[in-house]
Length: 248
Image (cartoon, rainbow, N blue to C red; front, side):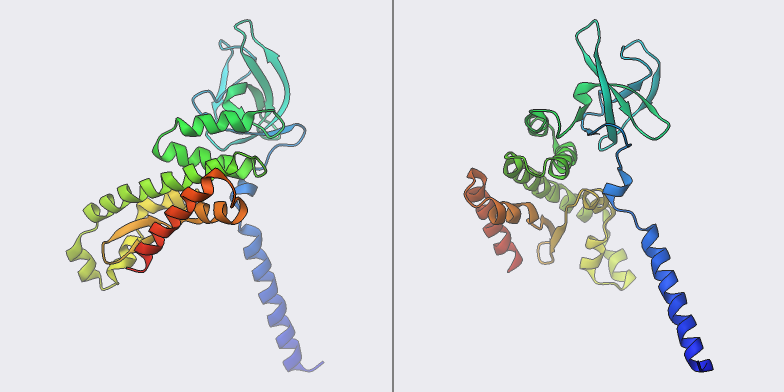
């Protein structure tokens, strides 16, 4: 093998190693929320009830408070004297405890999709979006999915109104002009969008009106996957309205 070929091979191997290393450091939300082994998969949807205790009793020692979206493994259950069902759950390999059953939902438990839908319907603003995102991730085959997709999209478009107002108030026109970048790019980099992006929501930006709009992904899914559902007609109307804005 020539010296030139040897150098090329070493360069190729080094590049491949770097690519593999970079890929290994990338983690998806699903990977970040891995369920501990040895139980039925469940996810926290009501953080108000998500107190992990060392026994199935409200007077037991509090181990930690768990946030929405936290994955747990249900390994048993017990009913308290007050009539409350507690689940014995694994949180990590070394951490476990007892949590009130209503704090979580699971595909293995009948009617949990219905219960989560009711919670979504009675949630407001960002809480509705987060819980709807959990539903869409967990209950992928639920017949209630079109209803949740519609709620998710409606909440996102409502959020776009507030984001447009907040961005216009916080982004100073003189500073943007002095910065030299296109004005629209300041809006699309607005930090208020970040938490929505983490929930899978993408916004478009109307440069003329300087307003954000939901990109309509959930409405398109309804039309594509559930064209005969009762939600499909409303989804089509929403997409038509969005199309009118896009061509302006």
